[in-house]
Image 1 (cartoon, rainbow, N blue to C red):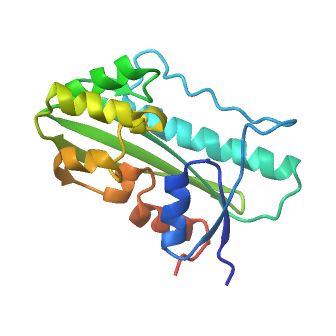
Image 2 (cartoon, rainbow, N blue to C red; image 1 turned 180 degrees about the horizontal axis):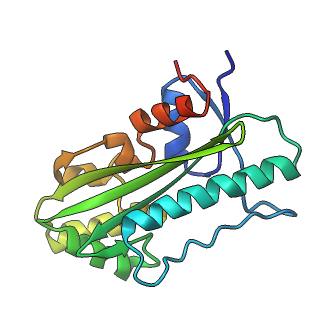
Length: 202
């Protein structure tokens, strides 16, 4: 049985998670030159976080199909995903700078936020999407802890400005949901989704 599939993401965390369960993911770049299959990740006006991640995961999978066809690649399944953090009705993406990262951490301090990860699988003419929702509670953070974490550089390539698998694990007092989902790829839901499109994980 083939273990090969495409990952329409350059996230090292998603690659690591897929390899952890014995799969052989190949990154399918959507923005490589000369052909580009860009997805606009700007939230629509008033768009709820759940709708946003579901829409983006599907768009990325569809862009992956277009890239696969244009590049005449083997017809392996395509996985795409999108993760965002929501708090007080706001979508919190990747911080653009240190001030934004620190502001996000202050928002989380002593509170519970929601991490939403949508996964899309495309194979054999089908595109299916599933949502994972997790609740994460941070301890109360001091300004010194916030400054040290921002200075570590960890917040800047991560949705919501932190990585559960890194130093921010020290801040998490409680998690209800999926650890791998907070990392960016909920493995339980991903396996179910791949089976739905005819790809057996085990």
